[in-house]
Length: 573
Image 1 (cartoon, one colour):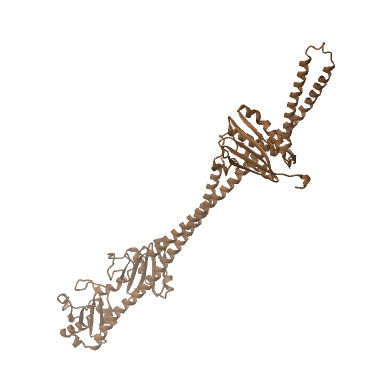
Image 2 (image 1 turned 120 degrees about the horizontal axis):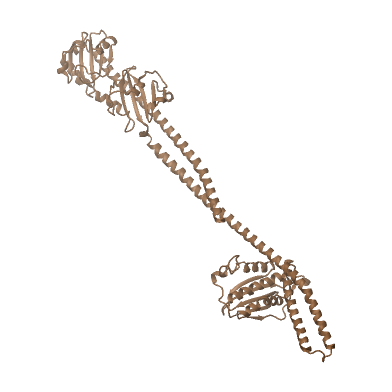
């Protein structure tokens, strides 16, 4: 149940650590990735704003260049010169080496074509343009850049036209659409981005990369004319205008709108006649963001996993320490309970011995009195006088035996007091042997005594030392089991008393010698030993200032050696 308890504690602590780690980490990942995405999108918006501003300048410069070229020609040559076909042919070749112009028209103020050079001569020669809108705009304004229209050639195109100051004729050039469209190709961002130009009515003036032929209803919302920076917020329709960001880059008349996952920038050009639209798919430009986010997420998750692993190891380590301490405390509690039980038994034994001693003394006294009176009686009148005297001796003998038993019980009961006194270890060992000698005889175990006769006494705790001897003798008898010899010898080695308990058993395995005095270590069968006997003996001898050791005999069996200092309180040692 304790193991289950500690496992539950482990899982609870791990769960708490996981919660305290995963939740902040998840929030951190979400905040970080969201911030990175916002920063990436903001960067895209700034980039697309700068791009569309640049393209506005390119388109304006392109158209201005064509318009200035025609104005220069009109200023240099009179209509009489330009109206000559051969002169116009030569001029066309001279000014159109780059191929930016498809054809040239010289038209008088009545709208009649005077000369033409270009690929559509068959369908255009002799045409009158007086009723066309672009011709009227030129006569009024002096110059004009048209929208894309079909015209007499029935092919989509747009023209740049200028008139002389006296409005006597108009010089018109048709712009090469391919070259003009290429100006916008570099403004397409990403594989799914596109850019195109529409007029005020939303008619595409340049082709759409996606094949779009007309604006959608949402795109038409972008055609609202704006001067300078204009902010439109249409979150309900999925359109968010972020034109305020353009103001930070001094981009005038640029409106940047963000539709769902697409960023759209618009810029009115050609004096507000055309609207340049650039679209960029957000995901096309977020490759670096995704790679950075992935690296950050992997880094955060890896770091969190390492922290969790360290936390798990630390929790396991401390729980094992706590479990070990709890186990020790539990074992100590059991020992205290056992000691209390033994103390109770000792007190009970002392009480019994004391109560029995008095009757035994009375029996001894009365038996002695009878023994003293019998010789005074007339032998002729006492038929069994010898049997009486023999019985009296047997009574005295058994009373002495009972007295010896009570004396041993009293000896063990003195253990409770833990008082030190001068003892003879030969007597303590002999007394311990008396407890087990009968059982040893039943198992045919011979106990050989080799006690030094002149062994000095020592001041120590006799009852506890006797318990050590009794433990060693009991262990030897358990090891021998049947038919063996236990040799107990005592000697003096310098200032120490030495007691050896050598049996003729199987000895101790080498791997067990180092653990023989550990608590709860036993080689006995389950239920036959607690593993505390040698541990308690080791503890007692150590507290008494001595040593105890175990070894294997060369002749077989094991030997336990107890060494105690000779302490004589009278000598001050």
